[in-house]
Image (cartoon, one colour):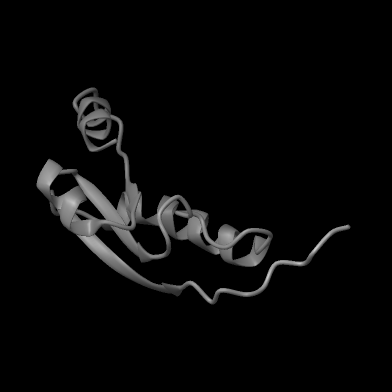
Length: 89
């Protein structure tokens, strides 16, 4: 994704990546990224947690404008709570 992000940025469009592997994201040299302490494949938060997902998306959009230094990776305070999923019969 970082290579795609760099290509998009090359056309003057600001981007931000969400990552759970900041060391790997840093190795690609993305323009800006945010690290989340979530399991892989869950960049936007826990399933069915609309409040958390909305907050992450809102912060991601704000990060596009607030990160001014290239190759910046911020770590956000969002944490995976591991709530049990409701069982549906």
